[in-house]
Figure 1 (tube, rainbow, N blue to C red):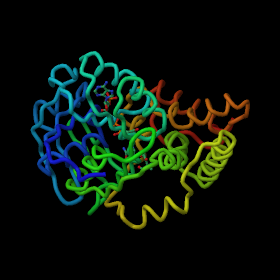
Figure 2: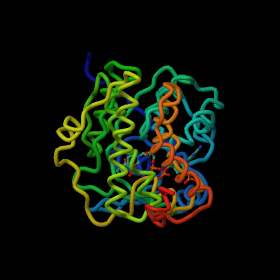
Figure 3: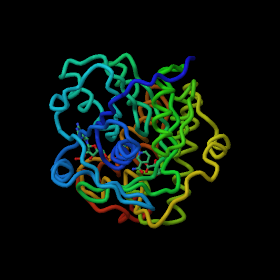
Figure 4: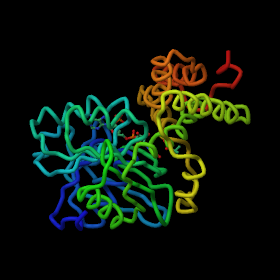
Length: 322
Ligand SMILES: NC(=O)C1=CN([C@@H]2O[C@H](COP(=O)(O)OP(=O)(O)OC[C@H]3O[C@@H](n4cnc5c(N)ncnc54)[C@H](OP(=O)(O)O)[C@@H]3O)[C@@H](O)[C@H]2O)C=CC1
Ligand SMILES: CC(C)(CO)C(=O)C(=O)O
């Protein structure tokens, strides 16, 4: 592999929320060209005042190109699309890009879950996956916050389905220039499956009142899922390896209300990503003719909460189990 090429790259963040806003914002602070795709009140606030990216040590108010329709940004071959919508929004988001007719884009899935990369490959040849360890919060329209410092996140990257190349090296170097920790991974998907196992708790914790029994159920759902992945012959990085990679790099500062799924309920978006987290395990189990009752229950309750716009953390564990 040769050295990363020095030509300028434009990063187009598709879904400039908590993660996309923080990554795009800090890339812009580091001097990279960044444009944002957002929607609703968030887009209106960004257009009016700029995107505010808070970190534990600084507040950046960034005037960046922003639009809802990718066509408005004049997408061009060579642009790197940082796909940072929730998994349930991926298909529609990708289609909004394909409608521009520009096919020479690089798509980087800056998302939890493992279905986004497959979807992106349907439309684009150059797809990369990032294992996102970046606690971030979408505070209010126009304002996002990185919750860790001094390193905001670990963003290891690899080509899909596997392999290393100059483009991955270039993106990884740009992420490092923006303060992230990022390594190249020849096989990124086993890391993303490991992260999927971590995220199986998002849905239960988002709906339930915090309790010891909730944490036991999270562990049980995780064990159920690991058995499904094993039966399917899908490789995932071990908890020990994941712990070694994280080390003490991420230091949470201040308060954090909850996971990305919790935030969907808190913001009352009407949707939640659980179908692409626990739902991934459920569909795999169904293909194998196996049960996955805890992941199924997690999926059912979370989607119900989102649809009914119920506030997070309000269901007792007894109700969840009933
Ligand atoms: N937040 C976190 O701490 C972490 C999140 N992740 C993962 O990162 C990914 C992104 O999560 P997160 O940043 O929290 O999500 P957010 O909801 O904060 O951000 C996604 C943004 O994309 C917008 N959006 C959705 N579809 C479109 C579209 N077609 N065009 C333009 N904008 C669109 C959403 O709008 P709207 O609000 O209207 O839906 C929202 O503003 C998820 O996969 C999540 O699991 C991973 C690690 C940590
Ligand atoms: C691991 C966790 C919960 C970190 O915030 C996350 O990935 C998320 O919020 O979705």
